[in-house]
Length: 195
Image (tube, rainbow, N blue to C red):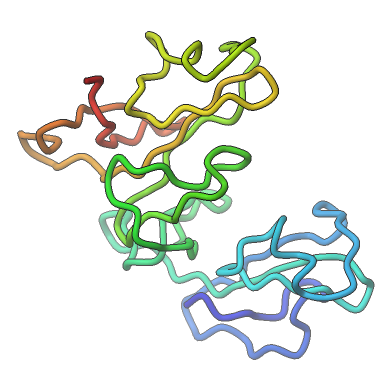
């Protein structure tokens, strides 16, 4: 799991995935990022997804993805993702940031550490729905709590934090955290409460 694999010309010399795993990756024409070396590709493709400057001098990446378990969960270092209707485990960057800490989410909190294994980085890219003409204090309100590590970028607000999945029984979240629903699947995570 997580190793590079041959994917449409990316990692052409890599070994194939073990039985039961899928080789997932990035279409270089879609990524459309010219490169001279693999390092040029790490800004568009996370290191854990094995970025490569392929023979056509475009960035690609690939990795072996095991299927999710019977509960739709994955081992540490991986997160579940829907791939054409099937659940596969996608590798994620891990670090030392704990629940409630900021984490890199697109252009938000880019210098923050990645979340520890088992936590997810929940966030919102800079949005023209929430504006901050002068400073980040204007981001804080009903939609973004101060505990969600807001940032003001180009006059627009964003935020990010590391979050644990909700417990299956009460209490659903630890003290100081509250349930929120995230994404189209409305997955339940524990977000920092407003102070």
